[in-house]
Length: 525
Image 1 (spheres, rainbow, N blue to C red):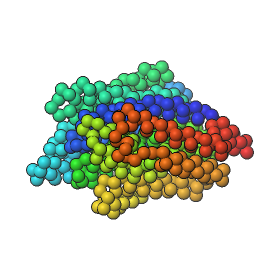
Image 2: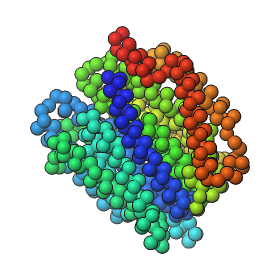
Image 3: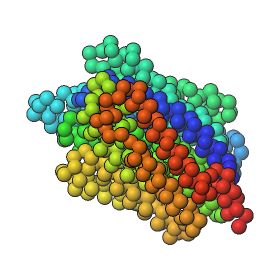
Image 4: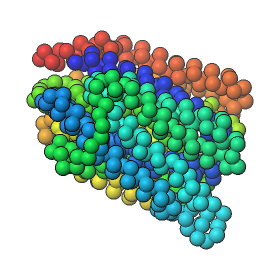
């Protein structure tokens, strides 16, 4: 099973890598077009709200509630019952999200005032920042319908993932990046306000992603006509699991919205600096953490249905090892090379050296919580696969409350960087609570060998950091280099860090064949 999970994880990671690379290209294009000014703040704001709801309806709470029930229906019922279940889920979810989308479009000024309160107050006072509120209200009308299309895309992707067809859903986000890049090149230059062109790119990207998955779903024979099924027993089970999970699995996204709310009171550029640093954080998080979580949930759900607790624990152990093997070095690399990465990727056009430096500070703060973000992604499925959504919700509430307190304490002395530190701290608290509960329930506990494994990874990471600090030139000297040479230097440093880490891990006995053999030994034992 471990080799199958590894293969599935590599497929998802490869597709996610392509999506993240194009996502970085998209952000480079946007940074060149708008920098970290007022229009950029508004675009990221207008894009964040539907994306937050997307993570609830399409990827987060819905997937965590839907996949375990789908696995149960798929394993215990015939094809006709499965199709009826899917038709009723699609009809019910589609109708509800359509209503939410219409409300969001019509009520965009209310949303802009709610989450951008600082801009709204400036609008009421006739201050210059009031223009941000007006632009945000307009752009939300364009970006909000993205929610409807991406929710249906998430539904079809969850079905394909349950059938072990991971590549299609992992590739789909590429189309959103292509749409936004295309809009930035061909639509934005034709408009008086370029940010509106980017909003249209989001809208087009939602349609493109939905259309792309339909042929693949048709080939499985599970493309069904939606039907309303609010009271269907299986739909009711999904609904009951989803309602608490709406909060629990999306705590990090709610924290980011809280950051946006507070950042609307801070200096212009705060939202953009947080966005660009979060985008670099999302690269390893999506490539490793979300990829592993994507393949582990259907597998854990099947383990739970078949009452195979030994395999359940072995798969959880595998996920924890993989997340730490990839996440700990990635977090350290992001923190050590934060400013060079910002400089090489974004420092051109309207994005200047000061923007690079400011964004690097929040990237370092976010990076301190990267492993915690990843751990939440793989520990939460340990509950959701067992159809327990209440426990993650309870801990999610605690983590979000702690984040609010941290925000208040840290935002005053550290500004937007304090918001990033607070988000990282709340994620760490969330991960610790989830692990503690799994341990206390006897569902999962990291073995001694896993702890030794983590110690080896930490040692290799420390060696990597020491080499990177020694080999990195200082920033003034780096900025004097031509752009191509800057990129080459950064690539060489990343390659050097990866080489040092790999050699350290191999010398300590950590490599893919050892991971597979160790998992097999656990199963045999």
